[in-house]
Length: 236
Image: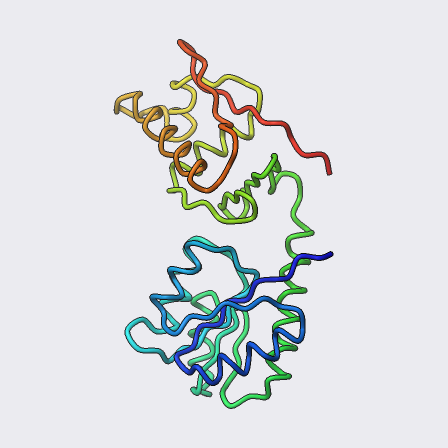
């Protein structure tokens, strides 16, 4: 049985959310709802979604802000909804990272068609990624091109340096890298700080992976030498 795709619907109009939920459920999607931008960001932070339907005109945190915030960490397809029909508004949404744009009022059937098209496009993009882009391990995926780490298909919130450090270790799986080597690769040969910065970042990465539900520690400490990434690669 195929896993149902997860769609987040963000709109302050509960009647519209209910209507879209009915249509999307008929198409086999699981739907999660958010009534405003702040609620949407909280759900995006704690759950993986295959697509986001995002209204522009919302109180407190509008759709532009939500779209921009999502794009800082995720490449999930975003379909924006708005009552504004001017070209400049559409351009603004696309420049902020939206994948498609639908002007209210619209037929629910058209939205469903747009959703299917975006899902297909995203699936095609993922399938075209090469082994150089994706590193796959048990319950763990590193998307170097998308600058993301996933545990059980859910994103892990790593900082830029944490991601670079983790990716460097994973790209050299089974090989011990010293603190000096890691500092040179991540911070540069002219780094004048303390080598313990590596230890601090490793500790943070381990804690985030554990909180995300990873059942094993992929970063092994080799005392007196450095660190080694160790996990059994999944066979495709």
